[in-house]
Image (cartoon, rainbow, N blue to C red; front, side):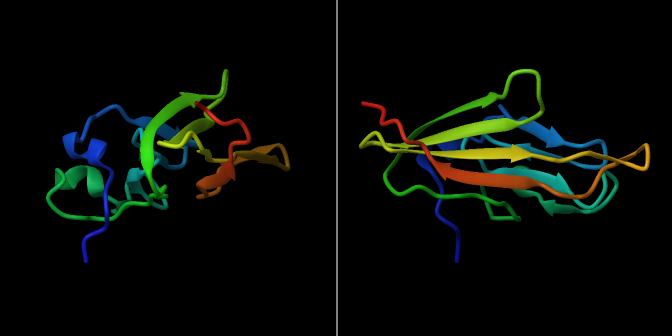
Length: 128
């Protein structure tokens, strides 16, 4: 069964955001879909490789679908590698997806776990 897609995704725009932590990176499209990521390292096989399909078939992606989707806004949080994507309905309701890859310092050494953190929350302000 083919996964449903947003109508705007059919053009397969290459306007992608990068989220990573020096151990791996993920490419996220403007609708908050993880379309490409090699895990657990850069030289691993891709776990999410929908970017390579050209829209013809589903080759692994991670998305969050919003019923009655209208449009999206995406930006990096200032001076960070944290990506914020807001998905809006035609009624003005919004959902925010925050993506980031953590890095830690442990015993004076940098630690880069293979983790993509996705926080999904409802936006409290309605857009008219």
